[in-house]
Length: 118
Image 1 (cartoon, rainbow, N blue to C red):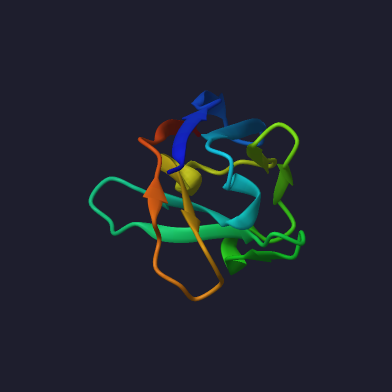
Image 2 (cartoon, one colour; image 1 turned 45 degrees about the vertical axis):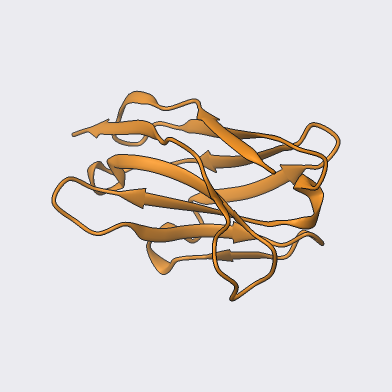
């Protein structure tokens, strides 16, 4: 069993930065692929970034060069560093865990709100 708790969201001006954290409980955290999603008002949830057990990363095109995902298995935490934020980055950000790339998601966090003002 893995529980995920996001934090670090808030209100920031365009061009600013935030770092989101997703703290996981459970002994098998390090075995999971960890992903970040976001959902803007009136839109579907979309993939933002992901990181494998070995540290390989993947990003959606709109955040490449601005966002960085990382994980600290000793702290059971995955991070999303968000720089050069834009108003279109506004939304609720969720972390999710799945046992392998391409697999179904087993666990989701409750989400943290990110609001970028212009």
